[in-house]
Length: 507
Image (cartoon, rainbow, N blue to C red; front, side):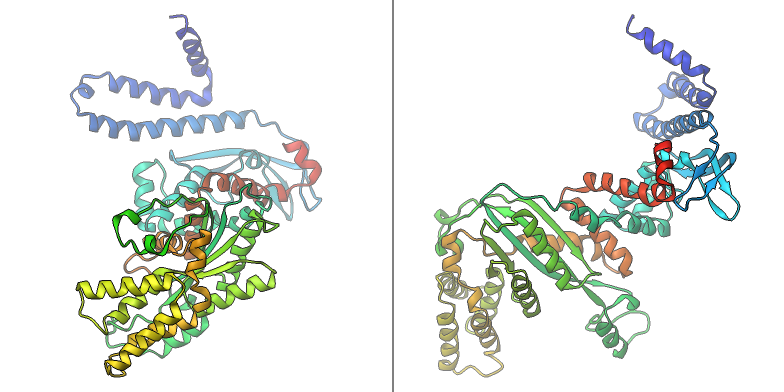
């Protein structure tokens, strides 16, 4: 009983505060209903639904009471000086503004300091760190998270169902764009993120197309799309979907221990060769459809430099065999005088081998599988040139036509062209990774799972914002980013509007 006395006294004191009368009335109505005979006849699901709605209203009234309480204690000042050096000497009291929150809409009442011909200043807005628009921090955060997971239509429904707030689709798109505005600045603040480890530092990158509105395609793609003729007016026919995508560059940097394996373990010639791979740590992934491929690759190198500024560790760059990507990576490594081992993904090599194998064998036979395993083993042993020559020779001996042996020549050309990046025997001895599973997974997660929704066509600003938020969340940085974002919002919306001396007074 003694422990309840302070609570009762606090509640009685609360009843005396005029600002919270509405909230106390809502709370009492909740208790009266829950104790009523009618409520006792309801299923628990109906009680949950009632509490969600009535509870949100209680929280809304509590927030409104708090804002009203602060408003009654805001004392008028003689003047407020802006960053423009102009003193606002006229104080207009009790100026309202609406604020949409996760509990519902409330009204913020505060003093405005004015000077004819100049914008007004609201010190209370600065104290509360209110946004320039009507949406609260909590609602903005919910929109950013939900829209990064599912469509904007679903975001609107989710916000309406799970909160007391409401954000229309267009406003949701605007809010997520604003939410992502500090992405680059946030990661630039981590310039001293040196890792205390001798483990491998891996950089990996790939590209994925996103279907865009015609206006937001890159210029060459836009011109190609304009020249296309369509069979149907209402939809695109099969084969007509080319030149509708803008490529997004995806990058990842992570740390992993060296992991020595043998070619036989990679090919898994028997169950005894199955080994558990070590886990990776400190993985950051991100993507951009707005910035160029070269810019994202540069950012990946800068991220690696932040982690290992003196290049004390072994650097590995894992990619597929896309020519322009390799050229950009080599150019960036040379420009920054960086030492790294560039490796072309072994899984892509296997895909070429399977296509070549179909020129010699029927599908789904033991022979074709054994041929691929045998050639794959030799490539892992550092004999890619020998494999290329051998398959060409067999195609000639068997008299395959130019059309029939096309996949063989393509595979052989690939092996010879990228032989300097296929020295898998050396890579395995050093414990380097040789597969791009991390970046392939990143492409699926960042792009396919959200921006690849069937029927979606994206505007550039929305696509870029979604990629940034998904990247932040996937890298485990969302909470830290949001605090950084709120500080920057305060500077943009408030601190930058006041004179330096006035900020001390307003703090």
